[in-house]
Length: 537
Image (cartoon, rainbow, N blue to C red; front, side, top):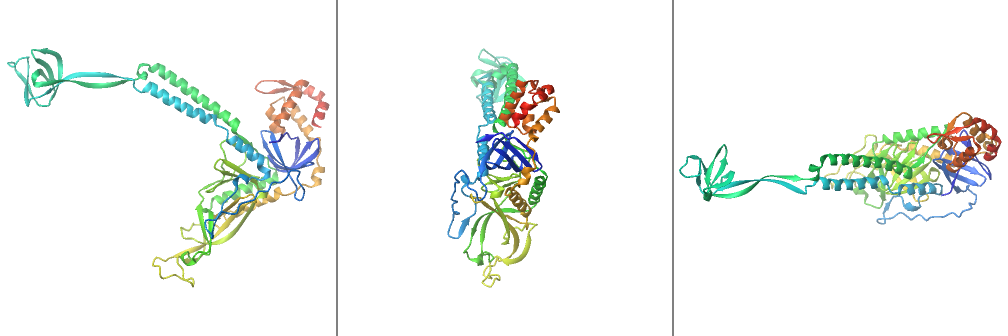
């Protein structure tokens, strides 16, 4: 990608750009401006004060670079009568004006997320931690001895002999808890309910019974240590996630800011408003297939059959990727095969993890109305113009051979065709007549604006000292500045900002302060005005 750092000043919708080769003039929106310079025509896209450029040619003039022509495949056919309607040749869909933009977008989007990596790594640590400290490694077993009666009826005596008093009778299978495992003349002390006494051992089976089996874990023996360790590890994990999220944002973000002049601002407001009205359309479909040559009598007399999918994803604003930063709203339509993001100056297209982009001047956006035999539920905003029968005879009347024959409405829908020479080919259908017409008109207006040219009078009216004056005005009105002030307020690039700050530091105009601020020495600034003017010239 060929980066450069622009030197420019604005005159309403016009911006003049300076270089050693001469003066250029640009128009459009900031961050996506069309520039006419001595070396040719360029399209600029801004990010953090950095701009890249791609040379394109005037119509009728020969470009220095050889133009690559891509043959667009003919639509795939299921049979001789059915045609698939979809975008083809996605890898070559991007126009020459958007190549660098897409390369940068895909480069950032494909970068590994440190946040996700650390998040899943932390989950694994958490699982291992839980297994080690909370899964039992031993058991505290509490046992007791019991006797099980073997005979049908057995007497429990008050003392360990048959002549003593009978306390209670027990029966075969009863389980009695042993109170004293010391054997007295073949008698053993047992308890049953609230009673206790001696039972003759030959009449019972002596067994061991487990009363409780308490698990022993490392947590049960080191609770305070584990609580403290857990809090510390959790805190470090959350802190790491926050820092890695910030790092991911720096590594993966794409910043695209727009600075609109009055004319473009009015057009942009209509751009947003017209799409908002499109969101109120009850039903929108994507037409995927079209076929002819079928037996009309089985399809309400329709001459063409279409396969369509209901579009459920529509939004007034949706970002194409997580770290896409912009001050503009991006209308969105999610189709079955691709996703459409309408930026102020171009269409951004996403297919799975791939991106493509086409300037509006390279898109054909057209529409037509069509009669549609609606066999499903008719949306409330549809216009019904007639009725037909599901099965028709040769004269157009109902075919009486079918007992379930019923009347179905004929609606007037609008079809919208979004196409480009590179292979973009999508057809949308709205239940409301002219449901997307206003948005189509706005897109075509932007297309016409992008194809416009700047007159020589615009160039002649500019004063080349304006940029230096803007610099002096800024520094005389402030006591301190940051590097980002030069990038955002004076539109300087990263490299130019660093070089200028170095010059100001060496000359004593700037002194390093706190929190990335530089202090300004106004007296020394006035002393080196001539040297600075030569730098800008």
